[in-house]
Image (cartoon, helix red, strand yellow):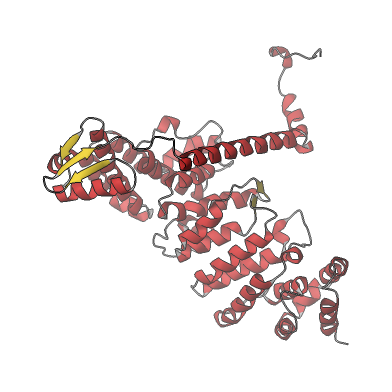
Length: 452
């Protein structure tokens, strides 16, 4: 019997019970090289296997089938095969891998990354977004687990401008990370354009502003959290992604908080490289923040006009324009602290808007967004500023407060468990032991013995 036919028979016969699947896994690992050598003959083999019943065998055959170079025409054929398999496959079987400690060796990860490359070749990233989300969910051990597929899924969401689809996975709290690089890219794709990474990977090409997930959906606080993770991540040398993230970090801070200070921009636990060098590559943005701090709209607009080309080259001009708009909002908010009523004409004059109609549009948008509380009398053009109507005593508010408390308690338990786990980790203890030799403990008032 032909070896390939014999392997198909074994896949079909050993895909029912856990014991058979474990035995099949050993056979498939041994046959991996021969499968790759027969990659041109594997298309009919895939037709003899059912993705839902023979998931493990189908995956190994599919991995070998897609391992070589592929043309655009071949991609049109293979993309439906891969997406169909991902949607139908058994999650327990696809988690099996040659090296469990190295998730990048998961055959499902390799196949999904090829799917990403193929849909990008076809210039149809939206075709890969849904299947990669499905694969990531099937590969996850829990919703707190970050897989190697998360960053690729988010990249396709950004390219396809499917921001809400990407947000569904960004809302998960991540505590388990297999590869540190995956967390770095996950945070990066969550809210910044892809231009620097395309350059880094050698795929240099003209790119317009591809948009951002959290920023595109006005989830500025979540965007700041992700950007904070990028710029404070451990790094021995400065990289383009961190620089781009820092520029966004400044702009989003201005939009969301209305301020940004160089002296407090990075915490002490950020790498020394970031603290020392990031600001040197972001001078136009630091100067923009300084101009914003003057609260003078004319000065800010003049600076933006002078440096439009720089911001446009960074694909940040859209965000910079939002910074300018946010200053109008901040100035209107300051008026609520001084006046009870004010005409639209006075608001336009004070905030330096072109007309009362423009002032009305700004006020209406701020009321809709919950940034101010006010009513507008259309007849006489007067705005009446109100107090916050929330009394913090409704059932909905109590449920929100209780939910926040429960989440904080769960986070505290998680941190305690992680602290205990790290304190017992052999690598950590050996490193601490080496570090301890560098210090003279006679210089510190540390007790050497405790009496209980």
